[in-house]
Amino acid sequence: MSRPYVLLSAAVSLDGYLDDTGPERLLLSSPADFDRVDEVRASVDAILVGAGTIRADNPRLLVNSAERRAARTAAGKPEYPLKVTVSVSGELDPDAQFWHTGGEKVVYTTDRGADRLRRSGIAADVVPLGPEVDWRLLLEHLHDERGVHRLMVEGGGTIHTQLLQQELADELHLVLAPLFVGDPKAPRLFGPGAYQGARLRLVETRAIGDVVLMRYEPTAPGTGHLARPADRHWLRLACELAAQCPPSGTAFSVGAVVVAADGTELARGYSREAGDQVVHAEEAALAKVDPADPRLAGATVYSSLEPCARRASRPRPCARLILDAGVRRVVTAWREPDTFVEGADGTGVLQAAGAEVVVLPEFEEQAKAPNRHLLG
Image (cartoon, rainbow, N blue to C red):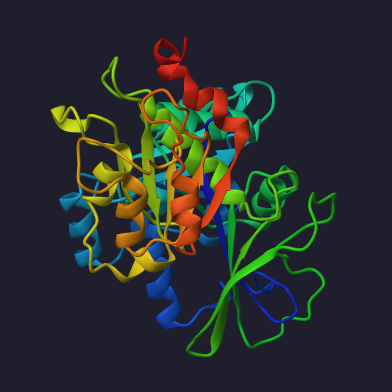
């Protein structure tokens, strides 16, 4: 299944509540943290909230910074991310701010909910998913039909719980506010049920004013001790890019993505991109990143094929380009065969320089698919 990278974002009290039971929304974040959330919103393709959040909070879900909106449009993206909500019943107020601010909107619902929404004249695309809401089908539709590669989920607790329990979340941004709610009737972030995996992996802690941001990655059984849950998403994208390469009888079709440590995509590329018959995927992607970008030091290069260790068409092979860029982590699907270069060992070059190399063989067949004509 192709789906977006799913980032869960929430703020809670010290005793784990999202809100109190008063008539006004309890503000848990600080002004500095609201600006951080605005930055994250500007980096994603879509923002999702549940119907309960629309009813309770009447959110606008905008990118408030004019500079960040301008940067989005300069990069060829819409001014605002796509706004997404989910409603089983279809009972949503057509006058809510969600529908009348920002850019495009889509609501996922059931067949019965779709009938109600269409009669209400709601200002959004309505997508029925059948008799029940299927999260995997929803995410696949967002990826394949709406071009969403990075999705931010801002609530509520039921949706966060479902995505974690179904192992569909790639990252959790949890802000801890220095106060207590203490009301058992107030909403909590996570509900009861079976959660897969063990301890989450702590990626970052950061004090932002009087709140603390904690970034976690869920565990992913079966990916190996070096792999991270997000690796599957980005390597799948690299393999999809390989399928876009113009065919060649003398070179492999490869896709590559450069991703910062915080999950932001820095660049992507593929072999023979833009008509250059000898450009390699990693080379094409790295050329789009400012060499002075400090995020390169913590970035990962995802390549559908092991980066080359030797080549005739350029002075530096891709393994060396990666190291010279300051990147020290590579995830790939397939070790380079001896088709064109005997004894190729890009992994050895990378590891000798202290880089971490992760191979996910479950993607090998997808990486080989556009190269079948070269493999016999």
